[in-house]
Length: 215
Image 1 (cartoon, rainbow, N blue to C red):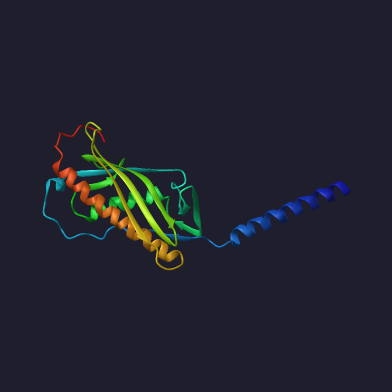
Image 2: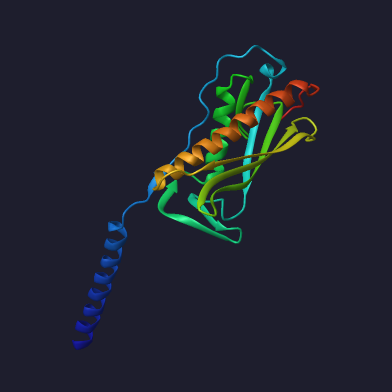
């Protein structure tokens, strides 16, 4: 009888501790979620050789530290931290890919833009590496640096037609996570604007080849 009482007490204690643990998790404040903006739609541009071209945007690669929804801060070249209580709405590479697609679409310079793997044909793949996507300390000043290395690849023979590094630095003015996000937004917008113009220029001068079957 005593054994049954003891077991019941232990089970009750375990259930209580489990309940406390769940209550602590549930009561902890949810992180603030942030996203960035794609380039606003541009004025309709005159038709060019790029206007009939389809672009498929591949997944962006990134280091394990940047392949995250956490918002990065680099106090020195050898250390990486993250802003507490703040997250991107998605993994950074997925968010950058989505905004790249939207920015290319908004430019009205291409016949179609879609993620690679979509049921849409394309003439070129756009591949990107995220080399930096973090706030960086520079003496008394903190800046956001966005650095994307892009490759434009022919869909027919997988040859690299052009490759270029795109980088922008935006100072953080003020205090709080809001001004950090605003600096990220400005830096990424600069980079996406440059990538859009570069892609259109490279596609316009590239030789066109008949499409092969498949994606």
